[in-house]
Image 1 (cartoon, one colour):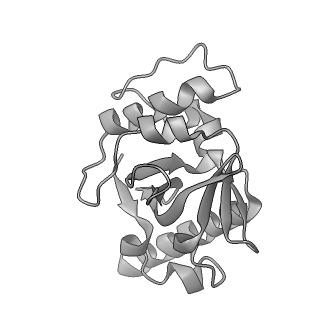
Image 2 (cartoon, one colour):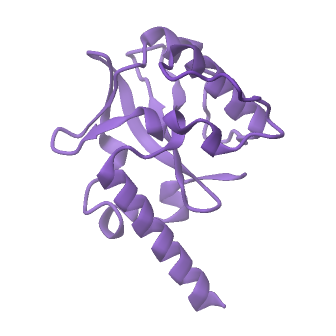
Image 3 (cartoon, rainbow, N blue to C red):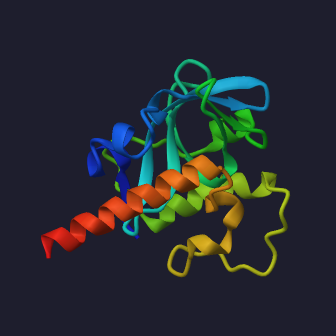
Length: 168
């Protein structure tokens, strides 16, 4: 499934979807340490939020990484994204994300493979492979536990669907 950057897919997301918040400026904390800042989000063809793009800046080797949205807890007042299970070692081990990278199933599987050993939920019984993967297989990565983020996704999908109807 193709992934798109939120601001390219929906340029007015901040005002029309996120109640004026610019998620792109939120700081990301792993345990008690700042590890970067959100620079964008990735969404799929159906309008589901899938990843935060995090710029680790000088905190962890200055690269961008993908963080599955289900791993995050967001504090909107403090403009912070908390990821209690994320470690600096994970960030170092993650494949680098670049702006021009074509994200395919193999790349996503490499990203998930770094996070899996740190998850507390058992992952037995699943077959992990790029060709047969379904985001619902691992809800700890992609299920939106944050009620506001879930509401924002619903708004985004409703606006997206309405615009498709108007085009037809």
